[in-house]
Length: 368
Image (cartoon, rainbow, N blue to C red; front, side, top):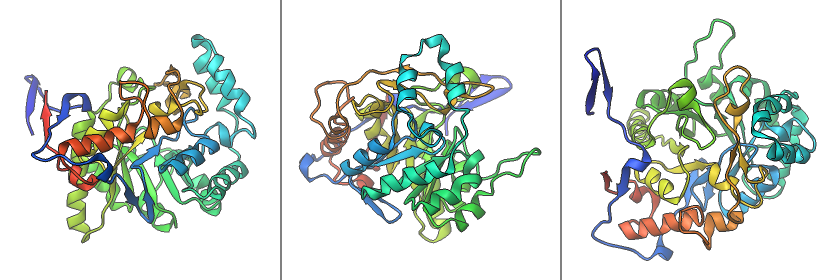
């Protein structure tokens, strides 16, 4: 790996973001209608290779059901407004109308309401009753406390998602979550992340996770890079974690762990490049927050926006561009990659000559 000299005492790796790379057409092209973009995670065969990010501005029980019926998976934030309030709709309206200077303080107040375990069960059962994959997400801090309720409610897929997650968290104040033991004892496939390096991903794969989320500080509503100085260029991160997947397959005798790119996925071009870099699927937030059905009403925010000590996220106004159907499958009324995300992925694969996602991971890339 190429290193550059920062100064006499420090060297750094050269890394690339998705904006830095581009796909290269091969010697053949294909008919877009003959391209397969389906994938399978654990026992679940999905028509579209994506999970909707567990953010209150993106996923409600209703949008989780709609996304599931369109072929993806809507992951509900089980620490969000939907599990703190019986009816959060008026609060979502209030958040959309808040003046900018009041946002952080008011979000802290709203999210200070205790999580209600019975609401976790109710929301998951509601999604599952619609006949789609029911998925929910908790941060590592609350996973041990609420995981039994998630399983009891019949969740099909469980995400442990934080700004960054390691298989080994060191703390002298509290007993950390033993991820390997926890996943082993849990009778639900687990997707965990984010991670951004080969070593961190390999350790997480060894914990038994069915999928690993790749990304750190790259979302449109995050200011992590400005506040903490931490960010990882996604093209390099995905490629590194894909290498960990390959080596873990050899180490484990063939166990395949899915690599899911999470962050910096603002449009269809980034989705195509993320998969070409080695991802099996993507987790997207901001493109779906622009749907007319989105609970954020054109605004987008995440956990980082109301952190009690160091907020490193913002409420972003994205506006709306169309329905979930149009954003995911078209037809598009814009030419900026904000709509028909997976029609564009299908066309990118056809233009570069690949018939399915695993083949597309071999696509040649250029750096410019």
